[in-house]
Length: 247
Image 1 (cartoon, helix red, strand yellow):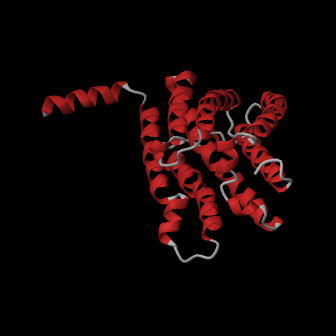
Image 2: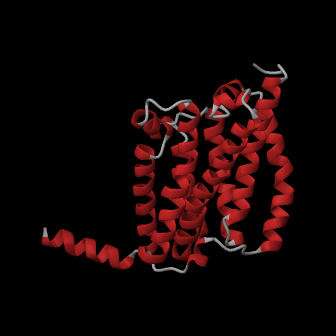
Image 3: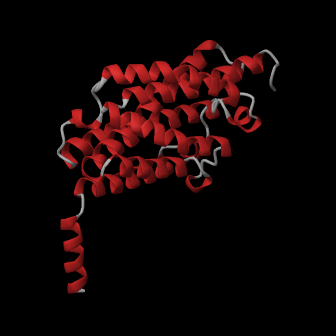
């Protein structure tokens, strides 16, 4: 046993400590989120809520602001003892970031249009199915929660994940690790069971978004692009459902 701890100590001394701690932190926080931050948890905890399907989705969307963003700020500042600016909260390389957003925004809007006709996608999305025919106010609150979901998600994976792992372990390792985890979260492993096309797209997006976050040193360009994909798809599904084009 003494030899075991001695070897462990040697490995710890030789490793990229902040990368290892960040990966373990992401593992723990995702576990907590999957058990206590999802729509399923809300439905089990508050079964008597009026319009519970809608509010459970909003809970699912708002909770990453607590689990991923708020807790992440504390982790970076007091756990890693890094300035918050090092976790991608600034605008970074604005020129390059804006340029890549201008190029990719129409591509992702087109992607949202195409995916709106995918049967698996338009059956699952929007997650709050009630907004397909609900008043505008319900849809606006849903999209606000969706935006905050992306802020939390991008901060966890592209802020803490990419920025902290890449410091010593390099960009490719950071991109590979965050892509692996974020893609698996889309599968039934985490209980979400997203459509295959979305999960496979998450692998591509993990690589692209990861590099953009690394290159710009900011999460805000990937927040925008992630939001464009999700918003455009849901908006197209709502419009096409209401007009009878899909149903």
